[in-house]
Length: 261
Length: 143
Image 1: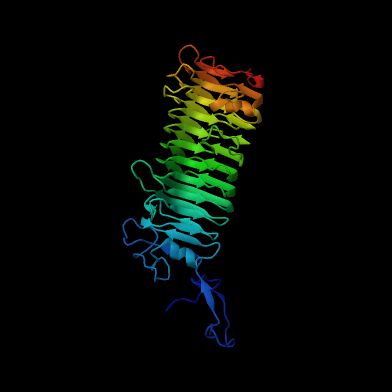
Image 2: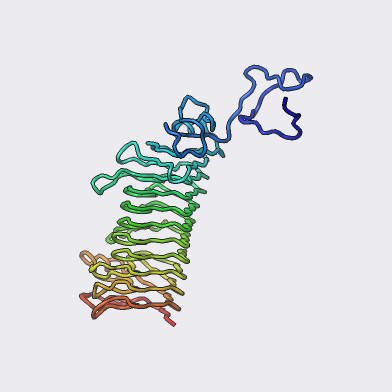
């Protein structure tokens, strides 16, 4: 028999509401249908347990998404997650084009967590919510006769407070891309690698990116490194890239230019 | 404001850093080495080639600019110019650019450029093959 527990106890899943219909009786006797609960963390694993760090079984979207019984897809985890949740994506390969439309953290197990595109011209992660963190994973595009058409991280809406940490993004048209409708305020890129793509990070002509901080990491072996315009003849070139800080970063070995504003 | 402290630009074939629009930029303690290795015109470490507007306040300091633009006669370490003519069909003249308040100081600039017009630091248009008007930036400080 277990010893009596004193103090607060954290349960998972915990109830976020509910009614006890026998308050005079020790314990909690819920009124049927009166309770609902939620995880604060969800787990995803592919069909292999090789190199896994977070989960104890292969993934299945009919699972509850716990560490012991993880989901198989990030999409499923995003569907059930709530703002503030963390989605732990274990080592493996995930063919996935996801739109992150909730304030969540997607955390891989390092570069052994690899997300690939379902289509040859898709966006692997579209960031469409504030306060999204993407970290510790690899976004690998599709190489098509030296002309990849995928995007690793894609912005095309108004978002703020975005963090990209320890992310490797390779073999894309754009490893990270702010499209014309993007209005990104507060983008922090830390110790990340954008490489072997057309552009490491492209801010399109009409896009807005304010308060961008890049610290550590590298942009390397792309045609263009970090570019906000490549149209020398235009009179309406990019003006919405403001508040840029790049520290202890390496831009090297681009086929054309390292930094282009 | 653009700040790039401690950032390294190496081995980029045409240019390490290239700007057509740039205001209020401070490059402090950057390393720009072995860029512009191509024979393409104006291969460079830093090419500030401003177009279609009025620009000001660019500072490059405490940095190392080395071994850039060594394969082209118009190459160099730091090239600074505001375009007022030239370009495809003379398009730069339709909205001439200006640049005011440039400060380049306390840098280590070595072994950049090649041939007759190669330069460590070049302010204004290159002398080779340029037929337009060169007004250059104003208020340039290079103590």
